[in-house]
Length: 284
Image (cartoon, rainbow, N blue to C red; front, side, top):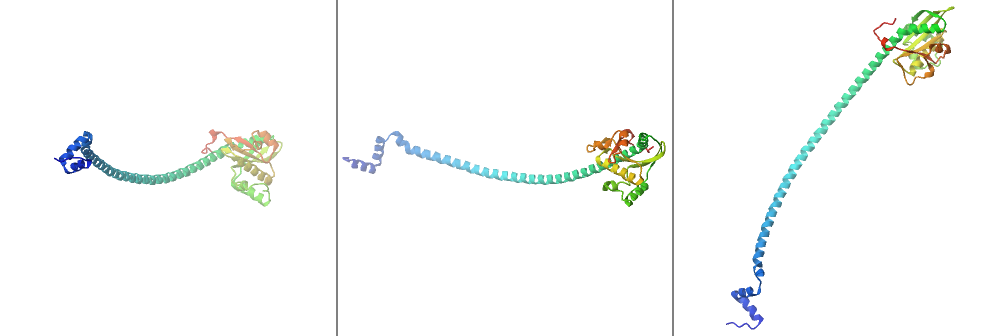
């Protein structure tokens, strides 16, 4: 029998004898400590399995993310192509719409111009229907009655203007009035009778909406005729309505006041009746 006298003898015996070492461990260590290696091994194995499962999950997730990224990129590429195509189509559509709008604007402008010409023709026609009445009213204010009124032809107007140029009688007459003198809307020479026979001239500027330039033009035309012929000439503005820029102090609505004052820069206002503005009806 081996004698164990010292701690060293005890340790040596534990190292040399497996059974003694195991029995000695059983006596010294608690059950928890004795089972700790096995539990650690089991924990390690469990941890390895979990790490492996997590690694697999991360790998699958990475693969899925890569696939998702690829799919997302493809969708984004398709969306970008669709957006670029849509933008291109929108540019083409906008360009076509711009062309259509310009075309419609041109058509509207043309129709507006045509409408203005028609309204002008209607106004001139209606004014010509009333020129004899206007002449009779002026003659009445002058204390006379009309024997005859004759519309001046373009040739007669041209001859008056030629004489005005030759005699230098166009002082103060603006270029537009000179340019449109021969083609005045309406001009008459009126022969009247009272105590004696005499004449006066009547010039009419017709417009659907009477503006300031209509008044200036007809007053200038009357000035030219009066300077050349040496007899009174009266300017009349005829229209459906008066424009905003018309100077009210130069447009007379009272024919008696207009004739008596004889303001060379003024004109008489003759309102046109819409129901008589039919260009197909011959002036009476």
